Amino acid sequence: MASTQFNFMPVAIKPGSSACHYVGRFAPSPTGPLHFGSLVSAVASYLDAKANKGEWLVRIEDIDPPRESSGSSDKILRQLQEHGLQWDREVLYQSHRTEAYLSALKTLKRSGLIFSCHCSRQQLKEYAATHSYPCPPTSSSTLSSLRLLAEDNKIIIFDDIFQGQQRQSIKEEVGDMVLCRKDGLYAYQLAVVIDDCFQKITHVIRGSDLLESTPRQIYLQNLLKFPTPTYGHVPIAVDKEGRKLSKQNLAPSLGCQAATKNLTNAISWLGLSLPDKLSKTNHCDELLAWATAHWNHDKVPRMQQSQNPDNLK
Ligand code: GLU
Image 1 (tube, rainbow, N blue to C red):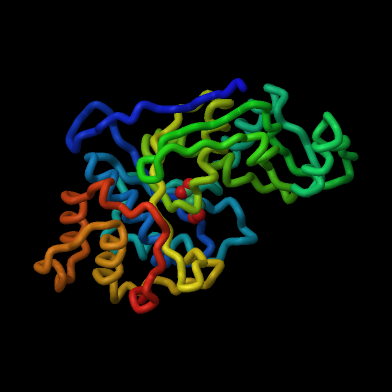
Image 2 (image 1 turned 120 degrees about the horizontal axis):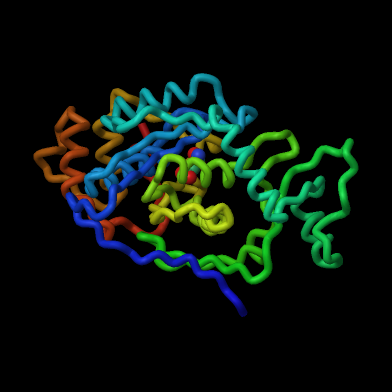
């Protein structure tokens, strides 16, 4: 079977090396304030960037107003600063980037891979199983999404820093992904790819709940002739029932009074044991400087871990 491989050579970047200018990012959706799970992703991406003498950017992914909660963007930015996580360039807001998303859609349309569709994912699967065309043509009065036709035999393979080699068949495991929803909003997968390229992101370090999205993003990067960053997915925090700590699951917001405690917990979560002399510090900067100097991919746990609720405050 023909396969398209998008492997990238793992380049060992020594801290201080000028071989590649490292640009990392943290890209929260403003659906609520930061919780412990999102702090872990922010800290991991920050430490990886700083350990490589790189830049760390923050992008607010505010392209889904129905899911957003008012005031969350500002709150998240305040919380990051309260934890000593200072970004290196102006914050990019996806709500200001719709022209770029439209222009990428036009490029993809020219390749003949975009079709308009009013089916649910399930209907589409059933239709695709019995017909050669993905779904019946839509009348102009029906609300439709724009989908990207999954090409046959596209297998995406990539090496994740923490999770090892990953492989996904776009046709069988993803199907025709939505790039623009029926309500006219752009899909996360499209916007994230456009903006990672626009911001020249070289390294994407984020929670492993997004591991399955990465091959879709690499597939889109390939179609748009964009470079593919290096990816690393750190384990996500789950509650005692094994559910991801998320704003939707009402994970508690981080309290800023406990910023050094939150940071200590996040750093330990990522496999580093802080020295006793830092256990009483009130300075987030000291914790981050120590963790940057001791950041080690081999110490980051590979599996998701359950978070002790006492540590969530
Ligand atoms: N905005 C996404 C979220 O908050 C993360 C996107 C990404 O890191 O690629 O889950």
